[in-house]
Amino acid sequence: MKDIIITGKRIKTELFMLLYCYLAANLVNIFSILYYQTSWMEVLTWQRFVLFIGFLFYLVTVVVRFVIYLVRGKKDQQQVA
Image 1 (cartoon, one colour):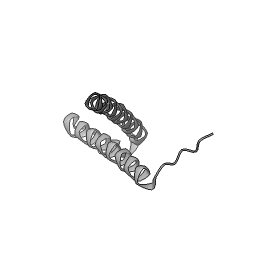
Image 2 (cartoon, helix red, strand yellow):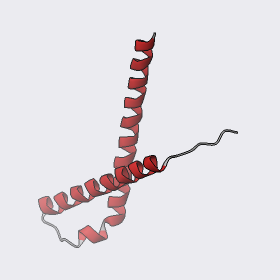
Image 3 (cartoon, helix red, strand yellow):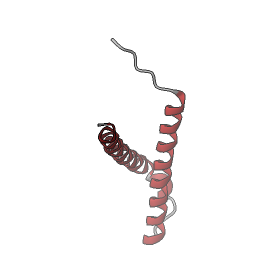
Image 4 (cartoon, one colour):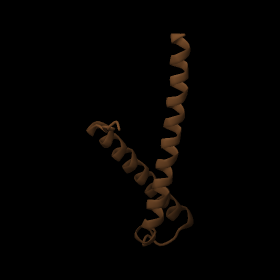
């Protein structure tokens, strides 16, 4: 069986993407607190939902990056042929 090697650079990139998605979810939470004029305690009490939404954002970015990878791959194959 062939070993799969994930480089440190790739791990770092993915962790930063996950961090950015988590921060984006927190910004959405803060915006909703400001928009609906609710208690700032919700920043802390809703963290598990913010974490879940952050993972959803990350999943969306993974799908988008995969689609871009597929499109670029097909374009490169057409240029070679």
